[in-house]
View 1 (tube, helix red, strand yellow):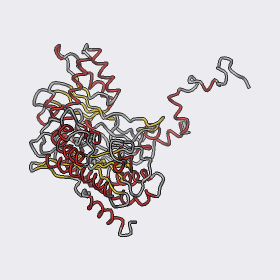
View 2 (cartoon, rainbow, N blue to C red):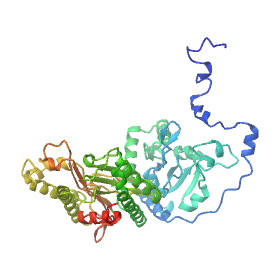
View 3 (cartoon, rainbow, N blue to C red):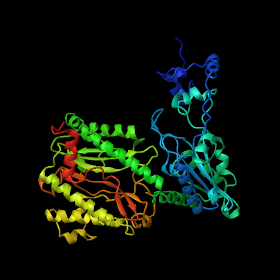
View 4 (tube, rainbow, N blue to C red):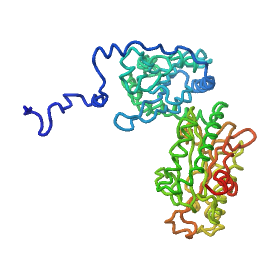
Length: 526
C-alpha cells in the first residue's frame, strides 16, 4: 500500500480535516443518498401543506398589551428581543427547545416554536404604531422550507421530515395578530439607519446574551456607526430590567396558565405518593420519585419548570439536591420540590415534606409544625399594600421563636432577630418568597424597589416557602434533629381581597398529609 510521506505517523491523508471538513463529519452516520435521481424523487409527490388559517389565540390580545407597555417605555428606539437558538446537549444533539421568557411573554409563543426567531419593535411616529403605540412589531423567523427543497429531508434541525410541521408566516400572523417576516431580512431590519441618536440615527436596545448572532449583529452595527458600546450595554440592561418588571403583575390569561400548571403539579404529587412503595424497594428510590413526577409533567404539561428536588433523609437538608441518587427509607422524610411547566411556559413551584412510611415521628412532626406555622405567618402577612419583604420577616420570626423554645439558639431570641445577630438563619438560609411565572424565579432582573421593597399588588404570583434544615453533621443541634429537612411551599395569588393559595389542594397539616397518603395507598399501605 502506498503512503503519503507528508502525513504524520499513524495518520492517513484522508483523516486530515482537509479531506473532509470537521463540520461535515456528523453527516457520515446518515448514509443519505446524494444521487440526482434520489433528489428528484424526494422533491415530488407530496401532498400540499395545510394553508388553513388558525383562529386568533386567546393570548394574542394580552401579548399585544404587553408590547404596547414596552413601546410606551422606549419610544423612538428599536427594540430587539430574540427567542434564542437551539442549545447543544452533546455533539449534534440539542436540548429540547425553549424560547427566552421575555420573547415568549411579548409574542405569546410557547412550547418549541420558532428557534432563532427575533421580535423587532420598530419605532414610528408617536401614536401611529400598533394599538396606538410608538412601534410596529414584526416577528422574524425561519419559515418551513417547501417539500421540494433539500432542507425538507436533509436538515435534521429544521427539516419537516425530521422535526415535523411548523406554522407558516400567514398562520402565525393569524394566530398571534402579529406581523411576520423572513429571518433572512433580519440583518437589514436591525441595522438600517442605526447609529448615534444625537446625529439622526436610530438607537437600538437589545435583549442580550440570548442569541450570540443577534449580539454580534447589533455590536457590529454599533461599532460601524460610532455608538459607545459601554453606554449601549447599559441601555440594553434597562431593556432586560423592563421586560422582567413587566411580568410582576400577571394578567387574567397568565393567572389561568398558573392555575393549570398548579393543577398538573398537584397531580404529579399524587403520582409520587403512589410510587413510594416501589421507591422504598429501589436502590435509587429518589430517581423513582423524580421519574413519577416527570411522567405527569410530560403528560399534562410541556415539561418540568425546573429540575425536581426529590430529597430523602439527610439529602433534604441540601437546598438544591437535584442529583436524586439516594435511597428512600421508611421512617425518613421525603422533601419533594417540583413544578410542572404548562405548554404556555408558566410553571408551578410546590414543596411538600412527606413521611415516607405515611406517619411523622414525634420530632419530625414538631419540626414540620414549626415550618407550617411559619408558612401560615407569611401568608397572614401577605396582604395588599404591604411590602413583599414582610412575608419573609413574619415567617422567619416564627422559626426563630421555635428554635429558641427548643433551646437551639446560642443567644436570646431578641439577639438572634437583631440585624447583627441572625443566628436562626443557620437552619433557614434562603429567602421565604420569590415571584413565580414563566421562570420559576420570575422577574429576577426587576429593581429592588419593585421586588423586595415592592408593594404587594393584585395580580402578583409568588411563593411562600419557609424551611428548617438540620444536617447530619450539624453538631450545634441535638442528635434527634439531625438529618431532618422540612420545607413547605405554596403558590400564592394576590387579589384585591388578600392572598389566595393556588396550591391549597395539596394537604399541608401533618394529620391531613397522613390521611391523604393513606387514602392513596389504602388501609394496607400499598
